[in-house]
Image (cartoon, rainbow, N blue to C red; front, side, top):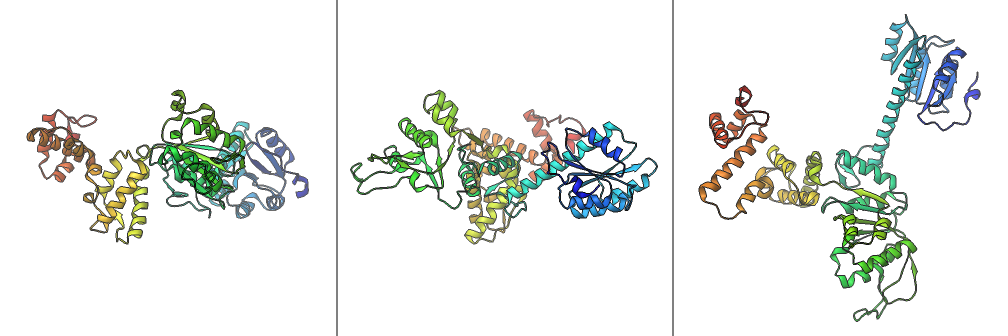
Length: 480
């Protein structure tokens, strides 16, 4: 057997490619039959042929026999790993040769299998190995997507910050759809970063060298929306003293981002639908169609499906925009990303404002992590900007955080109708003690030290309020 004998054009494999290195033709044929239909199987009868083959073919798994003519498998193993460290190698040994198997593991083998082979054992081993290989490739692909250099970006992806699983899925989807012409409908609450997603799609597309034009439809007066989007000719209306190009023409060759698309009037929805379908527009006051090459990305912070049911949004336009749906989760559903966002904004605003602020205290970060963030990332950004500007120390402290963020329960209490002083004090005390206990993970002694009172005082107040520790406050655990 020579390399030419096995270097046939590669076939499409569902699960991967396995190279069987064994001098016994019967062994190779048996493994090939066992794996038939599940993966591509290559064969080599010596280590030298296998190493030469690996120069020309990418292989996921090498099943390497220990006893072969020429170099034994244990010596071929490090050469296989040197050719491609990611290749998974399994050493086949005789039953009595376990010492060699242990040595192979030390040299980089992933596993070993003993002769005579058990069919189920081979199938299970190959399945596990190829699943591991597929997972490694997926991780590498994601790392490449997260950073053009191939390294994982410390903060996130194309200006989007976060490592929550839902955000990672969004990064993957952006990478997948960016180079296609598909229209994308980005949904999510206000402040979640919909325009950042649109810009990320544009930057990753083959239109990145062309304009990115963003339009907040809701921010344009109704009387001017048509002119803003499609342009107008001179004399189209009283103040139209000259021809003006609309956003579609300004975005020609690039990307047009229509934010808050749900606020578009029904008559203009029909005109937008025509522009998307025909890829041409007419200026206000014009009489001839103008071809435009624009990729449209749209965003909405309302449920457009409900708007369709309410007949406030055209169903045909909704389906035309919703080719690829992309939903951004609110910040309260990915609280794990808050510390990373806080760190990012502190670095950014400290640099922009020339402030010596380098971090955040545990207490301040705890308050920021607990807050509900109805305004999402945009609200967090504004809070950190204020904190950096007002901070009196290199570390943002709890007192630098707005009271409605640090103690929202207290602000809610103060916003209520007037209460008798004693009742207001009792409610504040209750909220403050409970919040301190939560921060201390219901360790009464630790909370008492923070509050500056004896632990028995805390226990007495809890008993008076009829409050029990989650999981039961009675017993020894409640007095820790």
